[in-house]
Amino acid sequence: MTNRVKIFDTTLRDGEQALPASLSVKEKLQIALALERLGVDIIEAGFPVSSPGDFKSVQTIAREVKNATVCGLSRAVMNDIDACGEALKVAEQFRIHTFIATSDIHVGAKLRKSQDEVLDMAVAAIKHARRYTDDVEFSCEDAGRTNIDYLCRMVENAIRAGATTVNIPDTVGYTIPSEFGAIIQTLFNRVPNIDQATISVHCHNDLGLAVANSVAAVQHGARQIECTINGIGERAGNCSLEEVAMILKTREAMLGLQTGINSQEIFRTSKLVSQICNMPVQSNKAIVGANAFSHSSGIHQDGILKAQNTYEIMTPESVGINKNHLNLTSRSGRHVIKHRMHELGYKDEDYDLDTLYQAFLKLADKKGQVFDYDLEALVFFDQQKQQQAHYELLYLHANAGKGMIPSATVKMRMGEQEGTASAIGNGPVDAAFNAIIQVTGHDEVEIVDFKLDSKGEGADALAQVSVVAEYRGRRFNGIGLATDIVEAGVKALIYVLNNTCLADQIDEKKQQKIAGV
Image (cartoon, rainbow, N blue to C red):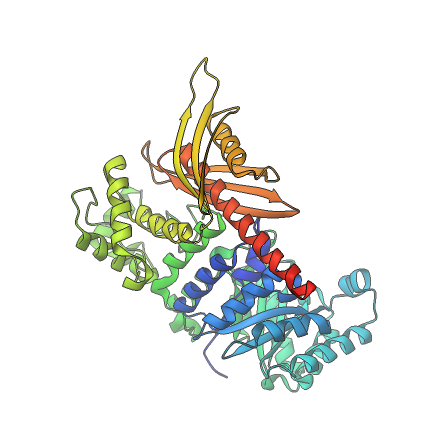
């Protein structure tokens, strides 16, 4: 048996299901390219049949990603599988992942079919998927609670039908490591053709055991782990990619297992996903949390100064965390910024140095000192701004104070036109939003969530505003970053409006296609 464990990332499918609003195609592609650079073996890009937007995202990722297998999810339904095949056919290599529930509670209460009927559906789905590709994965949903005799029978028939990977998910995070490991061991002992497929595991974290269960599974023969960046996903989340990758690397001598993950890309990928998905990483999160390599105890600090491995079983550098040695101020030159971006893992083609440097100077004048997270935020929001083609903020002035009615004036570019509007509101942000809605005419947009966070420490930290808005039955998410809260909120709303504009254009093209125009 090989000692290589494949890493199957489902951040863009299972992970995205936990977000308050869907990601744009560009945001998903940005994450996919980061996963490719991280060394992920398989990228589950989405569920193509679920929506036109998801279909386009999967298709775009399949076209652009070259060094990882791109995968689409489908139920054991022919239309689902056809959608996967159509979206993925542009890829150099791709996988179709089809699934059906196998536990008694799912088979009886959800599917309302017999075990034989479910098995027949699984076999038919696998055979249909093989018409598109030889790389077919089949999942026994809720395998952790499935009768072991039926599970063995299902796995054997799935492999015989042509599944090259069979996934054993602990869908509801119910099992404990000894129990889950025993399930995998039983499959290897009882399924006669199990050597003809890779056994995969997909563990959820409802009891906080997703990583432990995944490690137990590979100790008993599984050779693929399905996981997400930062452990995001349904309910309590999924198995955390960065944790299993570093467990297998740090304890390689004991486990005898390896992955293809470039661990020095872990921290940067974690931050990118956190930023785009607007899901902060808790400070004490293993591997990528702010405190993961922080030492407060005097005893610990003394030990670290004498020998780093007294209290660190891995180095910050091993996961891509670089210590800040150079103070970045308005006196810093371009070469310092380029050097720092290189230390953070960015290549020259990942950003425009002139644009970044000008943005850096403006921020340095406001803050005094700029930190690594500031630079990465500036890169991200510059890329975000590039896709905001239709609406652009040209001028913003807001008034608020005790005894005053909050008001705001904005000047906007809207395509080839410009417009100005003033409005009042419950506060300066509300007034600015009202002015933007007034000048753009987007009165169908309804703000359903507004979140404020700080990027950095102290009174001079950058403000990050996240806005979720509803527009014509869909939800759009926007993020804005600035030293001023009002400006950050305005940037977030404008980002939302640009996405609604793009959605309208896509819908219009679809209608024209239907009408034969």
